[in-house]
Image 1 (tube, helix red, strand yellow):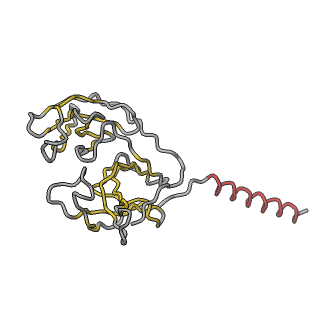
Image 2 (cartoon, rainbow, N blue to C red; image 1 turned 90 degrees about the horizontal axis):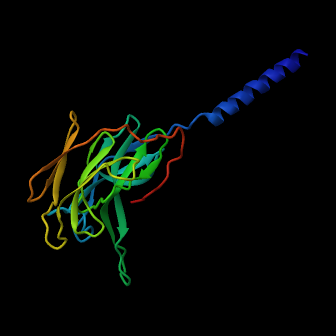
Image 3 (cartoon, rainbow, N blue to C red; image 1 turned 30 degrees about the vertical axis):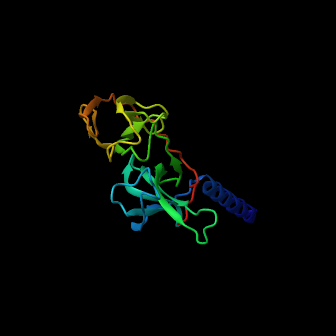
Length: 232
């Protein structure tokens, strides 16, 4: 009888341990690697290259010891567990008939990274253009000069992470793709109280807008697996 009770207790403990292990979210290790310079030119990235730029600093985004993406520029903490960072793309620049493969680095779109789950989410910022938009972050808000789909109008845009529509979209000026300043806009400036953002389009007076702050709409999942990879 005593052996039966002990056996039942052991089975119960083992079953409880297995259930607990199955329901406990896996902890992920998310880090940005050391910065390194890669060859870069306006020919390789005509929309995003800056005047005189001949190299680009990139860092690997590593999840659980595996390189998932390559990034460039500074990261911005949105919450205590999520951050945004700009992706760096390595595109195949080989023409048909080329004997040797050629690759070109480009600045890519922004990504949201969850440190707890390892999830990587591509952000679709309204009217974002790699060659025009210099994003300046505050909380979960992105402020930048955007370009309409027609390519003829420059807009002041404030977008909130996880919202499809911009909080602010105001026309700043007409845009001429063949003849424009470089850069098109300086970085936007944020003010906390009252919440205000100021835009600096080249050749135009600064434009300031007050923003009605809202609750963060970012939902951070309890558990998920990391996704995406971009090998150098």
